[in-house]
Image (cartoon, rainbow, N blue to C red; front, side, top):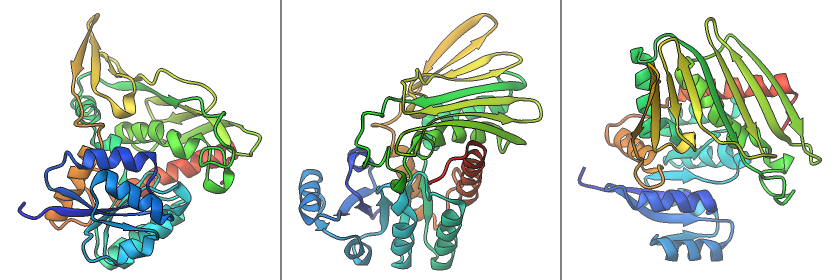
Length: 323
C-alpha cells in the first residue's frame, strides 16, 4: 500500500489517547485531524500527538477533505448521530463500542453506510486480539472437545466516579452493561452464537443506572455465565470448558496477552502478545478492508453488531434496565 490512510478522531478522552498511541504503530496509518467541542482541547491534543489539523467542532472535521476515516470516541449516546453525520460526508467510520445504544440506532448506522457506500465497523477491539482469535480457532477445531460451559466477567470499582460522568449518568446511558458488560456478552456470542434463552438480573445505583448485572445464556447443550459490575473488582480470567479440557484466557481477558490450555491433568500457558495496547489490530483490519474496497469486515460485520445489540437489548428487558 503506497498511500497512508488518513485518520480523524472525534472525542478526545482517555480512550482516544490510547487509540492514537497505537495508531502510531501501524505502518499505513496517519493521524491527520482531531476534533473536540473545545478548540483549546483539540489544539492541545493535536500538538501532543502530531495531528496537522485541530477543530473545535465535529462537523469541520467531517467536511475536511484530508480525512479518509473517522474514529468516533465520544460517549455512547453520541455514537449514532456523529457516525451517521460522518458517513453522510462520505467518510469511512470506526465507531467505538457499543456502536449505538439501541438496535434501532445500529440499524440506522448500517443503512447509512450502505446508502453512502462507505466502510463502517464497530470498534470491538477484543475481536481482533490475537489471543482471542486463537482461542476461537481452538474451540472450533475441537481442541477441548464438546464445549459445555463458558464463564466471563468484567468488573471494576466505579461507584466513586462523578455522578454526572458517563459511568453513573443515566442521560449518558451509564451503568456497567454498555460500558463493560458488552465484553462478556461478546465472548459468548463469538464462541457460541445467539442463545436460545437469556436470564438476567441487575442491581441499581441511586442515580438510576444499573451497576451490576448477572446473566445466564442458555444454549441447547451448553451455558454461559456472564457478569459485569461497577461495585467490585473481578479477576477477569475467562474460562471455556469442554468434555476434553479447558481453555483459560488470562487476565484481563478482553485485552489478553496469553491463554492457558488445561488437558489430561496438565495446564500449559501460551504467550500471544498484542501489538501496543491492542488497538493496532482493529486499526489494521480497517485499513485492509478499505484498501480492498470492502464496506464491512468479515471478522466483525454489520450483522454481528446488530446481533450483539439484540442480545444487549434482551438483557435490558430481562433485568429491567433503561437508558
